[in-house]
Amino acid sequence: MHEALAKSNFEREVANLSLVFTRCHRWEVNSIEYPVVDVTFNGTRPLRVQLTCDNWPELPPSAVLLMPDGSPPVGLPGGVFHQDLHPATGRPFVCMRGFREYHTHPGHLTDLWDTYRAQDGMNVAGLLTQLCVAWRTQVGP
Amino acid sequence: MNTPDAHEPPGSDSDSDEKKSHPMAIAVITTSGVFPNLDDYRRGYSTEVVRDLLAAAALHLGLTNTADWVATVGNRPINEAETFAANNLHGIIEIEWHKREGGGGA
Image 1: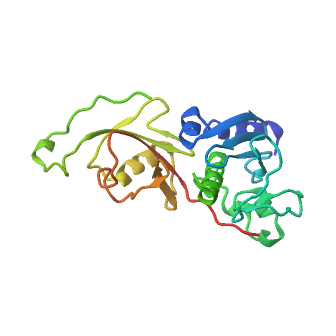
Image 2 (image 1 turned 60 degrees about the horizontal axis):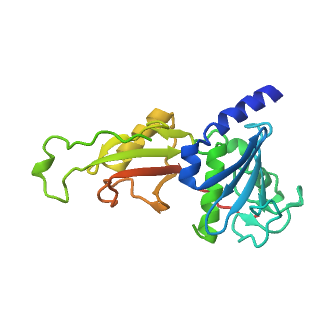
Image 3 (image 1 turned 90 degrees about the vertical axis):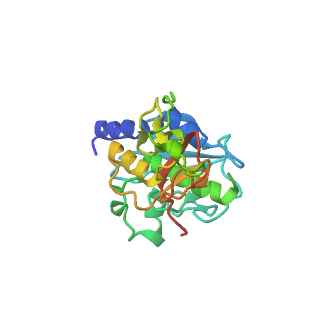
């Protein structure tokens, strides 16, 4: 995808992360700079997520899980939050449809991003919301 | 957000207290935008069915496939088939509405 188009797509996506939206979800936006959205889900146990959206929406976004201070995550709760290392990135990862680490994991190579990417709610804000709900379900609100 | 002027709809004072329609101010906050907009709430009534308001939000925001979406208020799931009153929702509320999260596991 042409870089300018990818950046335009990214800008349109992050426009959904309005102050009203992030306040309602109790998120802190650390930074938004193409192609990365860096947010912290506040709550009982905060989680920081750096979402790289290069070539959006041709590629699903790649999520890096972090502690709020930016250090590597410890004690991920399981479910879609894997403490073990992804074979391609060598990092703990999110294993949920819509995220690059899921679609590139050897166990899910046949479950294609193209199946999901046009669905309502599978945009950048939607994927972050799903991740946040999964996190708070696991660790508390 | 600005709240709308509150007033009772016609005929509401003849109902029992439980069924009386009380004015509300409602916003629907989705992953594709906010209904009615970023600055206002929509006037609604406690006897309205939640699903009807969500349908209006979907139309406004261009959402066409929300069959697997969930609506919550303050982390509490609400029943879209019921009225706001039946969901114990009154006054000024913000509904979070989004696609249900996917399962996982590698």
